[in-house]
Length: 350
Ligand code: PMP
Image (cartoon, rainbow, N blue to C red; front, side, top):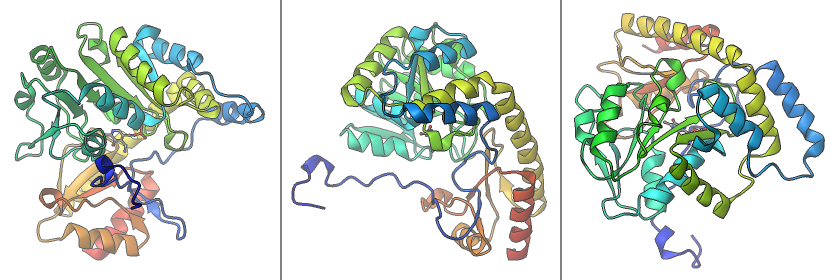
């Protein structure tokens, strides 16, 4: 740390992303990426943009916003697009959490929420999950805080129903409620349909998982016109060209070929069911994930040791040091071939 760093950032511990190995070829089941390449149309659309890179991208993100609005059945005024959904989440923390009551989110959820809260110096409350690792929606009703809920939650993969989300929105009318739907396309139920009913709802999503575009960095948000206006004020005050030309083209092409993405999601869902069963046959306790990963542990086996053992065999999964989940592994669902290799290595280790 230099002597110049502002006091407000001195105690910041940054978010630690999953490993992106550079040397050895791993079977990568650690960062919830898609194992499938982007669709053909995406590859062509990206290539076509290359000779225009001397020009800035469209700051209004016009074509992408229009296509997102069409696909999700909302008005273009209800949509924002960002550099990954991390960016729209960051904007939401910036915009809505430095108020008296601060933010609230689960004690086991996406690790970036607490980092964003600290970055922006806003107080936050971590609400414990229930013993079965699910979120208790009652804990979020009438709490007068800006609420962040990943649905499905990460790293558990568990969901809450739209009915419960409605109740949380209804009982917190003076605060924004953010529903982070990064994994919704793998079996969750989207809250997008509620944005016209509740002016305090922000639904965020990403192209990183179900649309095979993690490396392009593209996210989006759906909300009331006023919330989108707030977020755009922040967007234009930080980086008006937040989505680059190639990514804009990739996003539009991907939405036009959404059947390809949907078919890939169905493959992941089928593989997830098979791997869950196989893990259970090996004596694992596996949560009922609706995401593109499984969260599992086996009594008597240390999570960290299993993670290291798998790594040595060339399979990368995610392990978290947090005590309550220290014996769990989060395993991204890859192709059937990748998962067979994972199961083979796991059996050898056990
Ligand atoms: N929300 C959740 C729950 C996530 O797990 C992730 C991925 N790490 C994100 C948001 C952000 O994804 P991206 O920035 O790639 O859209």
